Length: 87
Image 1: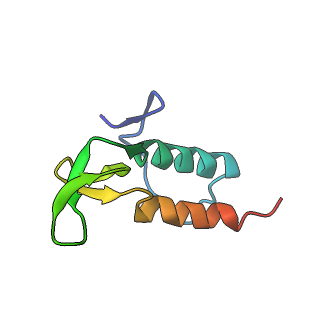
Image 2: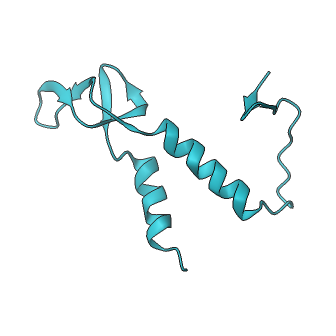
């Protein structure tokens, strides 16, 4: 079973013609942001040929010993969306 916010999503189908509501899009962004948060307990290649702590690192990208620096590409993309928002 696949759940999101306590709701069973197993039988949910992608309907490209369906227009998501603003609320649903904001919920999806919040869910992605919760996964791609900064953490301080990861290591990885430092870009100079060495292996060291990567701080901050993304909690969702990479792995414990092959970290991706935060903000990761996912959060950079979400950040660019936020900077384009109009009131």
